[in-house]
Length: 172
Image (cartoon, rainbow, N blue to C red; front, side):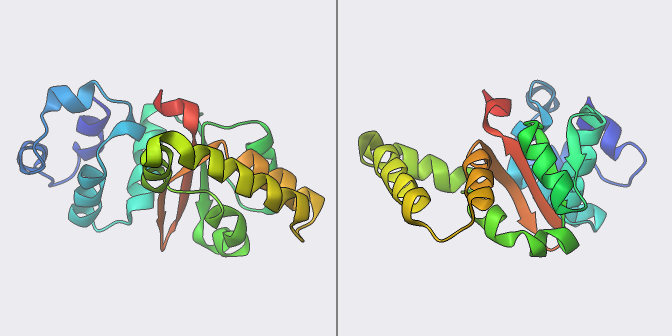
């Protein structure tokens, strides 16, 4: 329903697009927006002449306008992470300021590969490396706290217009 509403006032042929990526209306109707296939959002962005991050944000706002928080400065970003907002959108101008934090969060594909590799021992190794980094790292205590809280988020998209983070629990 969200997808249909999103393309309603455009020239996008949703049926053709879905068949080309081997999906049906029923399949997309049963998904939350954050679960939409990346190929669908990439194709929509291309057809509409928008960035992927813009399309993700617009779709999420259609699904639930209150679930996404757009941050404009460090205080808003810290507050959104503290409050465990479901979705955090970091526009490009602010993102460059916080790129070290954003880049410390693995993308979903990176994390999935790491967690499944070597029968889960990747998880244990990741935790050891993380704890050593937290103990001996040269970052400020505030930065370390933020980095720790950001581990609860995945990066859905990171493009020239912004970055979209979402809380891990949103996909379970």
